[in-house]
Structures are given as C-alpha cells and as structure tokens.
Length: 281
Length: 246
Image (cartoon, rainbow over all chains, first blue to last red; front, side, top):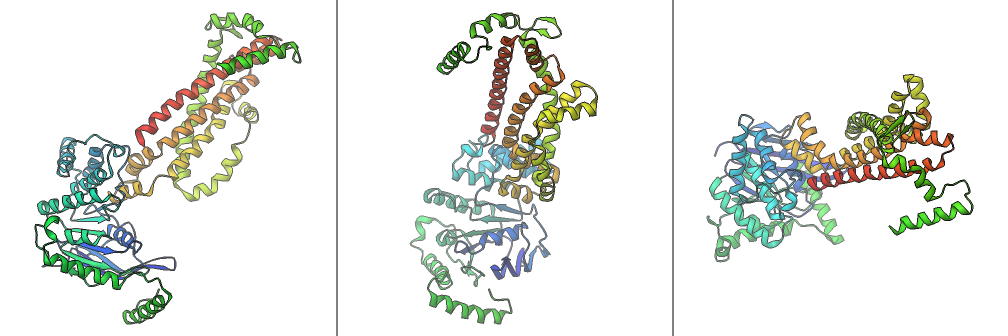
C-alpha cells in the first residue's frame, strides 16, 4: 500500500484543563473501512470533528493526502450522529444541497438526478419529497447517509451514525452498510460504541481507551471473511476471536471507578506519560 | 358570546349608576349607525365612515410597520450573529424599547416638520423592537448542527445566511413581526390623537372634543376589532411558517 490517505500524529485536545484526547495516532489507507470503538464520553466526537476540520487540535497534526487539515473539505464528508438534516427541506433537497456544493458544474437537472440516484441506493426512492419530520429515525439517517455518499468524498466520516436508533432499526441499517460497502468500496472511518457493529462492518478496528485523556490502542485487523452475514457470524471462529480481542482491550482500558483503581491508573498514566513525554492529565 | 353579554350588561348598569356621562349601548348604536352602515362615506375631512377612517389609519400603520421590518430585521441579524455588537447595543435597545410613542412624536415633528412623516417615524421606531429582539434570538438559537452542515459543505457567508440562518430563524422572526404589528396598531391611535390626522385615532379625539361620547366607544370597539383581526392574520401566517419549518 502507498502513503496513508488519513494520518493522525500525536493528536491531543483539551477543553480547559480537561484533556479529552492525548497522543492519538492513526493511519487510514484508501479503500479501508476502519471502526474506532470506544466508551461514550471518550472524545470520539471530538476526534471526528477534528478530522472533519470543524475543530483544531491542541497538539500533533492531522494529515489528509499528505497535507495538514486546515478546515472542512468536501473530500471528507461527515455524517452526524443526530443526522443534522435541515428540517425545512425535503429529503431530496437536503441531498441536493450537498451535491450542488460538491459538483458546481452540474446542471439543476443533473443535480436532481444525482441526488435521487443516491437516495434510491439507500432505499428511499419512495420518500424523496418528505420532510425530515415526516421520516423515522432510521430513514433520517438514510437520508444523511445518502447526502454523504452523494458527495462522493475521498473519505466518509461516520460519527456514531446508528447511536440514536432502536436495536432493530440499527441492525437493519448495519446490514445496509454491509451491502453498500460491498457495492461502493469507500474509504470509511466510523466511530461507534458497539463492538459487534464494529466487527460486522470493519476491516480494522482501533479501540479507544476510556477518557479523560483517551488514546488509541494498537489496531486489530478483522479477519472475519466477507461477505459478512450476521446470521452466519456466530458459526465463524474468526468472528469470535476478533470480538474477544477488541473487548479485551476495552475492558483493560475502561473507566475505573474504585479509588484504588483510580490511584493505580494515575500511577500508570504518569509512567506512561513520562515515557511518551506528554503532559499528564 | 356570554362574555360579550356580561360586558354589555355591566355597561348598561354603569350608565344608570356611577357613570352618568357614559352613553348607553342603545344610544351608542343609534349614534353610530350612520358610520357603520355607510362605512366608506366621506362627508367631510373629519366626518367619514368608520372603515374609511380605519383604512386611513391602516395605510399609515403599514408604512411605519414596513420601515420597522426593513430596519429591524437586518439589525436583529447583526445583533444575533455578533456577540460584540450585541454587548454594545443591547443596553441601548433595552433603553429605547420602553419609550412611549407620546415621547417620540414631538421629536418626529421636530425632525420632519410635517405630521404624517412624524407619525410614520413614531410607529416605526416604537414597533421595531420586537422584530429586532426576536430576530436576534432566532439567529442566536440556530442549532449548531445546522451551522455545522453549512461549515462541512464549505458554504460562503452569503449561502450560510440564506440557506441556513434565515430559514432556521424564520419562525422567531415571524413572532417578532406579529408583536411589532400589534405595537404599530397601538401607536397609531396615540399618533393620530396628537397630530389630528383623519384616522380612527384622530376621529376618537375629535369626537371627544365635540362631546359626542358615543363615537368614542365606537372607535374603541373598532380599534379592538381591527387589532384582533391583524393579530389573528399574523398568527395564521406564523403557524404556517412554524409548520413548514419544524
């Protein structure tokens, strides 16, 4: 493989005196589907906003295609956890808005057609003219996904896209993601707090330790064979192996609530930080 | 309907007890009939049908109100989007807001010499504030999510304004517009009383001076009804906006 498409080197971010992320390193290569799995409150959204260019890091650097990220770009499409659809526009118009920015050379008819094609891809061909309030949560996230896909970005950033959905809709959309990824082969970075979801979707998982001062552990390649079918996963020994590897890291780096564990963690993090030469929390 | 009957009863009783000068409902109707049955007549400058007077007032209100919206909306946008600007001008606005139309009108007369423009000036400056403040609140409350959509799509400032801020703030703006119209209608009576313009307020004051008290009541009822209608209209527009945008 050539140079990574997205590279994070020693990225840190604090809000006031509270360090959210420290020494985050990450490489994503073209065509990869990477899942960052971590506890809620571990700074996953902060990380995503930095990669999207909405936030600047305090430390370290973020490189996209070898150049530092200095703001939002239409080549990095961010899909928000809360969908962030504009409520006064129909599904179709919401997608068109993004398409028009991305492809200013297209005529209105072409923009419409382009948007419709992607809405059909996420199976919303029947709901083009509906407003977000007239759509269910799952359908809204489909519109949001169509908006991201329609921009045909170099990388799709999915910020806990299924976090706000009920379990059944969530499973349905996960299958949809599997299907879409098999067709489209996009480069995707997705963050989630659901290990099963990550193992089902990703080529590689990077586990994020619990905050404050969260950081990535060593990445875990997912060996479960494709195409993946959730009904057959249980019979796949690779799946169980992958799942265990992720859980092992997360449980070892989870939030500590007893006083003893907290002091032990403090000692450890002090040792670790001095070794890494970063300011302790 | 029962409420109306109650008030009518109280009115009738009052006429015979403590308020001997108050014309009875029957007398009021008798004296007002000509003005109501022939609402657009013009018998003289200060002797016109009640709707003709109303129309004159509405024209004046519309002019002042439109000026208020044209100045108030952009002002609200600036106030809502710039924290520094808000800090500087908010105290000033809070100070200007409670000034009575009766205080502005003489200043208008000094500035414009003529009565009509000074009435318009008074209406505009009094009715502007709800528009300014509500627009500012609307702009300040645009959800960060919507702004992020604009940022991720790298919208220009103009696009951010017209595609995100304006539609997101529109329901608040319309609440401001409705309140402003209410105030504009409140101010017209005071303005016309002082200037003696041939409108519903001028008529009211003239009839007071001519001791025709029945017409005072006629004017009051008309002012109330028109104000109610205006508010009802704006509410309908506001609701439609809210439904379209929520």
